[in-house]
Length: 472
Image (cartoon, rainbow, N blue to C red; front, side, top):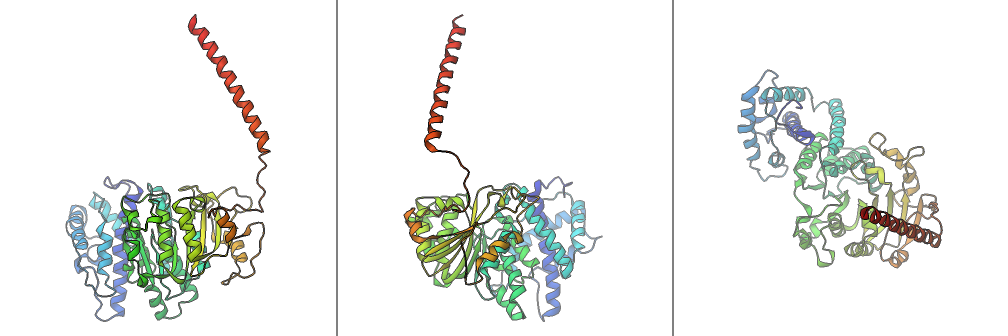
């Protein structure tokens, strides 16, 4: 693909690979379903199925292959008419191709790529797991593809959040900004390891996911990721902007049991989006709008684990009103403070994991400061955060009931009264860590005055020298 003049950069290469993988994966799945179910029909018309045009390594190539893909396959996929029946995979195919493009200009190089992909059998479990690792690496490498890094949350962080929330089949799990589907795949893995014992459990689990992704490339990657993880109907992954729907239109029937997400932060929504929200929550800051929505969307007793930047903890104005609403309507029981390097190199701001339950107001908030392992200055691309790094926090957590928590070098508790006294500023520093001694403030100010006086004196001397030089 790097030899092809039409493909420019990693984002286009990944996008190109994605629709090819998608067609191969869905065809492998179709062949399995055709054997298992009477009367099963593929959502892809026969002549466009992978087995029909791609499977023969000596098949179509060159200009004929390019013409077939550009003039026949793409128009057919984009124009698929969904049947409207439950479990209709046609809509999934159409949605994936809606924003897909064939960037490659050489039919010969495209045939070589197709032949490579053709070697993978997605119905072979060991091959699928091996490819799953490759695919995860591809998603991880997405950060180098322009600004695509905003979709990626380190796997260790998603796995820890899912592990603490402990979702179960049948609970409605929602990720309103799902990116490439990291939280969804982590939740699936968690449930399959613990609770999925029968085919009915698997069906119940798959029917309980809800997800939305605004951008075309991560949406396409997410749908492919779902197929790769054995989801038969990934149509629950909608290509849409969750925030574009009026806040008031989210009704009782839309309530969910679990929210697991890393909402985009630092971004601004387009004009007019904030008018979907009540006056006192209006802002163009994406993370704030999502937080307002989470409070509304959780059913009573529902639980959430979300990633938020430090700015959301200490920010004022709309942020203060949001935190007040959160603490009144939900029990914000735990905030895990992460070091700045967790999301490097795509972001180096401090982030926090917030865990809360809807229905009871907050009385106390436990803080836990996650620290970089001993002997390591920071997390990096070569030394990223790993799931086992959260072990000390898991040990401290106190199980499902959070019993027996104790204050220690990394943990402390704050009462709601302390939060209110600080104007809902949640940016509480670890009282057990020794701050660097910066000296006495009065002494520092005196030194600053001396330095400024010296600077003014030097400036006057310089002006005198310049005046003298110009006069000569």
